[in-house]
Image 1: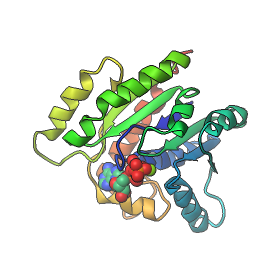
Image 2: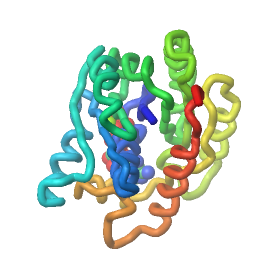
Image 3: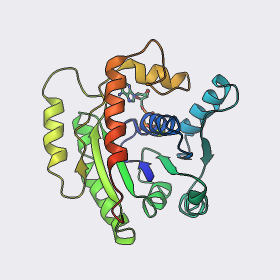
Image 4: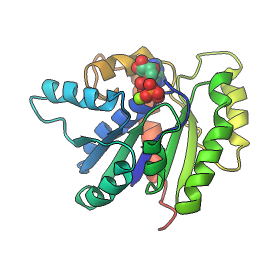
Amino acid sequence: MKIVAGGIKGGSGKTTLAANLAVMRAREDRDVLLVDADDQQSASEFVSLRTEEMDGDPGFTCVRLDGKAVRDQVQRLENKHDDVIIDTGGRDTTSQRAALTIANLLLVPFGPRSLDIWTLERVEELVEDACAVNPDLRAYAFINRADHQGNYNQETRDVLTDSDVVDFIPETLGNRKSFAIAFDYGQSVVEYTPRDKKAIREMDALYDTVFDIVPASE
Ligand SMILES: Nc1ncnc2c1ncn2[C@@H]1O[C@H](COP(=O)(O)OP(=O)(O)OP(=O)(O)O)[C@@H](O)[C@H]1O
Ligand SMILES: [Mg+2]
């Protein structure tokens, strides 16, 4: 699988998602390549931290790539790994567009906020452009940092399920401090102690759904 954590909105949870998926996949004895395609380099920082914490072995490989190299280098590297997870920046960048020309799956986190939802149309355009060269690309949205209460989650769900271009994954990640704290220790939320059972359950459910999606070409 070649999975892109992407979208147009900054701070939606792309790097948190990419880091958690990479760690969790590697824990299942898969050979994972995490590609940091964001010039902010948060994924690389996560892996540096993780490498220190884990006495030199983060459990997977991480490379930093930029622009069209995201496409070209991933094509060269993909056969050496079981799964490739690509973290992109919070804008419509050449790197993200390059990643989408070769990916099976785009995952787009949306916060339950109108500012996030307003980017859906641009995400749809991005996906349509990518599908013109990569018809096998499948795009999925899910809600990240869901509210504990109120109507915003449902309103966001309604908008996202309405899209003809982006499918909706109903598994949601709540707004939970443990995602941020675990990340700062170079860990996935499923590794971090004290265990946040709700966060682990949510992340496990999202992980299972994502890796159950069969690539369109199969
Ligand atoms: N489910 C969550 N619960 C609580 N905090 C979260 C959650 N997901 C992400 N965060 C926090 O939100 C902030 C932004 O998350 P993250 O860096 O993953 O977003 P991003 O989309 O990669 O941002 P950028 O566009 O800058 O690359 C971080 O501080 C992160 O710890
Ligand atoms: Mg990021």
